[in-house]
Image 1 (cartoon, helix red, strand yellow):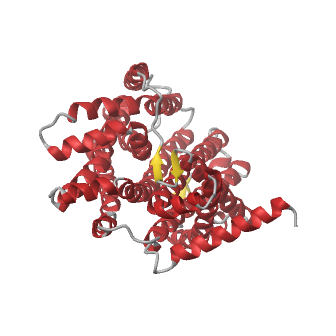
Image 2 (image 1 turned 180 degrees about the horizontal axis):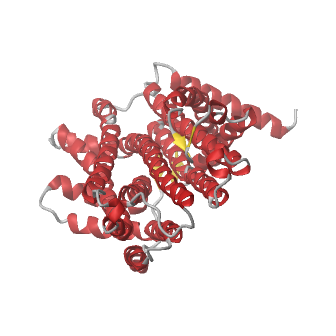
Length: 476
């Protein structure tokens, strides 16, 4: 047998043995594996649903529904729906990558002693990375199967929705078999690649697993760029003309995308700046949490980036009024009204799916953080610190950035769409439009998302108790 084939066979055999051991009751890692598989299940189900919606809008673009076929704006509107669906599908790549990376780091931190033993036996770090990558791909494969079942269960409630003035048909709610296989294959391959990249951020040695320090300097100029783009997102909509509603809506989307891009670059610096201010607090819980955020601002931002963008979408969608202006005919005005209503429904689904992904990511990141800070947790317990102290620190470290970026993102979204809301309030035909109710409704949605993330973080408490109970190093 060729040497490469023998190495591949040994690699697969070792991965299978480790996976079976992790699932076994003796290892105590079954709940961690189930958490990873559950996260991939959620990602897979959402990916299938979004891909199905994209395929449906493509079919309606090629063969417009009767409600759009004879209207002047019908063809362009159908293409706009398809582009938005493609954008939603592309936005899933980020959460999937983060989840896979968190799953691999969770495995590395939870199996520190076993990985150190493998290194001591002569396995290279790259060999361990390949084993962990294959194990993550195995978990993702199981998740794609479970996610398909969850996707099928979600179809009956979604069947009640309608888009483009036409209800969803059952034949539109399914992908071709090759489409499901392509989605599953993409999830598995992306998870393996993300796991490999995630494990490159740690050093696996015979002494244990150590996270690499990040030497790249955070630049304050990016924060200024974010402030400038956020200001533009507020000022530009105020210059909209009353007779160009379609162009106004497209410009809102473009400005939000630019603001989101600059937010990605600037937020790690701003998080470190805010954490530095709270690090000198007299409250020990706040101080320790802030110092942890200061030590890894990029990791913190990676965990909360998704909810920040969701809050921007929620703010803009809640505040954007449903009315048509500057169109050629009454029929085209009706299609604009229908389109705006569909945008609100689509934004609501995006926010719902996004917060589910954020909760799954928070769960895995919280579990990984518990193992990463295990030594510190045990040291605090030996020093006499109450058990609630470490739990409060972990909760504050996880939830304070989430609440902060959600507030900032929601305000940016509301202020961006506020000029259009003023146009609606000044329009005689829409005098009953209640902007305050819309803003409060969006705020309730965002608060509900934060509560969902908080619930996911609370699910890490049993692992915290388990770590405290391990006073001695057990044979791995």
